[in-house]
Image (cartoon, rainbow, N blue to C red; front, side, top):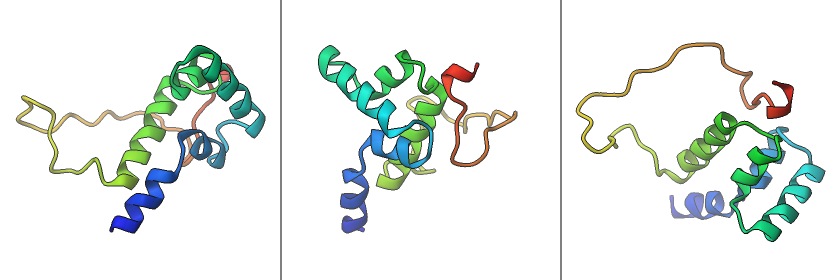
Length: 103
């Protein structure tokens, strides 16, 4: 288990987003340059540049946490006594988010 956590922890957010085909390597390089200049978090930069949506970013971060074992079904939000309702609706194809610029 420890080795799995170490491997997952080494996967950087930008690399995961490129691997999933959500942005290009060139877009990642541009976002990293903006991040270095602004001091902002990479995810925030990607959203501000319009490369991905906040929903897409949240989905990738959730998957990253799942890989680390940080999210489990036994964890509950503070003060919550029942499970959160599941929202239903159209979802992008597995592994893909709609880019912010396509809206």
